[in-house]
Length: 97
Ligand SMILES: [Zn+2]
Image (tube, rainbow, N blue to C red; front, side, top):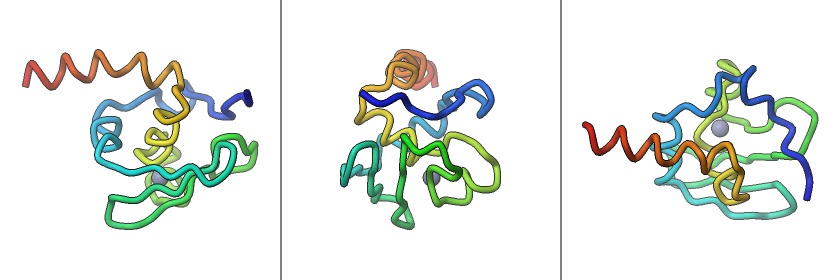
């Protein structure tokens, strides 16, 4: 199993609003750690295991250097611990709203 080359803390951690939006996206695994993410206004390509930047071709990741909803959608499908751990917090926030 490859290590995800993402520094969560440097990228501001798992953002709950982005995580919520990522749940409505579709992720198609095309190769190891590589996903075609659809369901938003544009199709985006994610590469989780590249050490090269960027790992997603969307503006949120390119310009703000955040972990965007497309990367989150891919990480969810990989069962990434940091993202799965954020789900209860997201649910609690949705319930409280
Ligand atoms: Zn993205």
